[in-house]
Length: 212
Image (cartoon, rainbow, N blue to C red; front, side, top):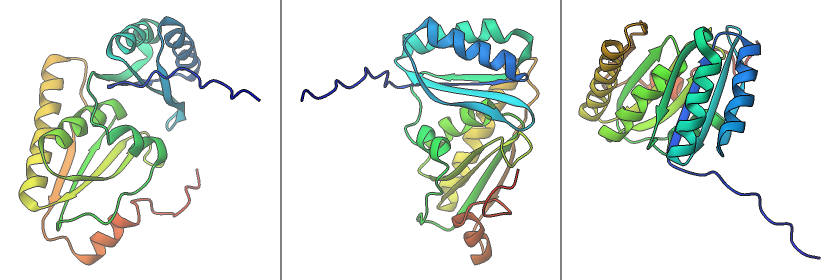
């Protein structure tokens, strides 16, 4: 019996994330962007607080085309968005499967939180590229009231550098996008106590299983 051919892959370096305020508009944007160009939908669905997230990847040009089309459809219902032409490879697996990556070398914790998911993704992409730190956990919206959170781990100077890069990226975003007011909330904890290590290694949720 002939083996069924594998479906074509849209695998590529580009990654885009859109956060849309209304679910109906989000679904319409999803329909439009997949019809616009050949991209891979990495994740999509409703999140707190009643918003719709769409993450998609692929080669740069198709992702740019689909991204532009989705922005047109979202219009005034767009909360935030980001397009990363050469996304850090650790990002997609981190938010797609929600796995906590531990143990990690070092003794310093870095935490980055934002009001919207695309803002966090942009900052963490640059932080991971610019400093030798581990991405322990990346959480988008659910269980956070719609906010986004990332935990980084490593040696103190590396974590400090990563946080500085993330903050600088956010400052640039604020200066070039006057409508955006999503400043990051960050902290660096050197020589983290064992209780903090345990809190990070087990994931940051209060309940082991999210209760809605």
